Image 1 (cartoon, one colour):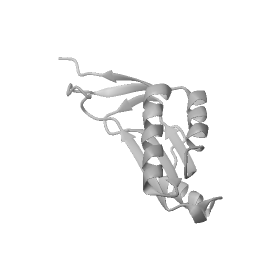
Image 2 (cartoon, rainbow, N blue to C red):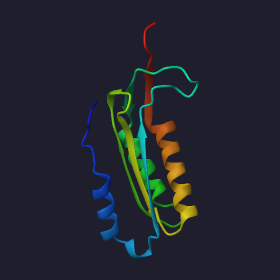
Image 3 (cartoon, rainbow, N blue to C red):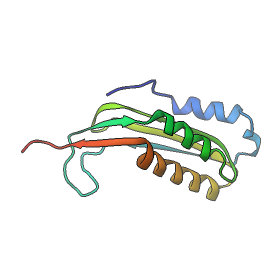
Image 4 (cartoon, helix red, strand yellow):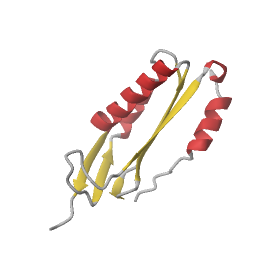
Length: 126
């Protein structure tokens, strides 16, 4: 596992609650993506190789911060060889009301998965 400057989600939340716009923030949502022992199609997964386009990640974070009602956007994405149970990403989104925050989190995680990371699932040899 890379452990690439792994953040503390509690520190992220504390910083967000002290930050600009905190008085207008009514909710924070956190996402922690983890390597599963099976793929979307149900086949077993032993581990994963993960690469990250850091420049694209920064662009996406800047775009997500402009969404309606959003005051806080942070993301960390791991990289390298990851085992089942290892963290793939942490994402924090804060904003005014639940629909705006939920939409932003969903969009941000989707963009990270489709535009930022390249995952290669490694399967057990049988």
